[in-house]
Length: 102
Length: 224
Image (cartoon, rainbow over all chains, first blue to last red; front, side, top):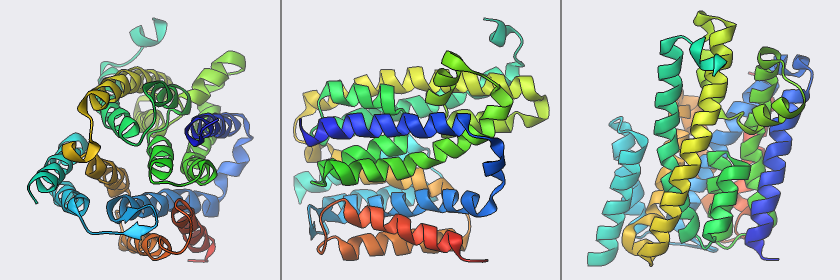
């Protein structure tokens, strides 16, 4: 079985297990402030790391290419409070233009 | 549907507008997933079964970039932890068992929880309606738009020519952006990005991303 099928099945199974166990656990675990804090910090770290890696890495090498330009445009769009789809399309269009003409 | 007729119009409106807006992001996921090398079937199954945007982008991002299935699953699952915590918050409100709990679990995501909590002033019935309507609404639109994006990308060919390789990190940026409200969070974001890039040439793809979760846990455990 390919890595992709393992990924689809593994991610889906664990995603559901996490959701279901949350719905089934006694509520007292909720009141742990440190747990809450970590819960807020983990997505920030992982998503930021994904932004960096997806923008600058290709396997285990680093590059500055058309992707960085596109993500830079998205950064400006988000800081100007552009809605999600608008910013993502801006990134795609600017990256594609640089890829084609540079 | 009883739940709809008893629901305040404002709760219905909130649920619908969130569902439609977030659902359209599914097109970005569908396109990115096919561009990363996943089939339309695999892409569809991720949206139906995983049904958690950040986790879905993570698994296709890590495997698409050459990471192992294991590091992809680990990253996606760490991002899915928060759904468990949402479940803890929603369970005493929903009070469901059996098959209803299974369904409630599947639609326990950022949006259904956020809309439910935003209805607090309108009472518990409105909170419950907000949860169910938004959960089902996002599920329907997210899956429809995933298919549209997946077939669209299949017809496109070279992902870079259409900017899809930049759309994926831009989507991650859009997912983290609303979370960066205080300077400490921005500092964590920049440190995590830097750490992941420093580690990229040194360890197999996928590991640098998981490593940053460790930084988040260390900061969270520190007394503040």
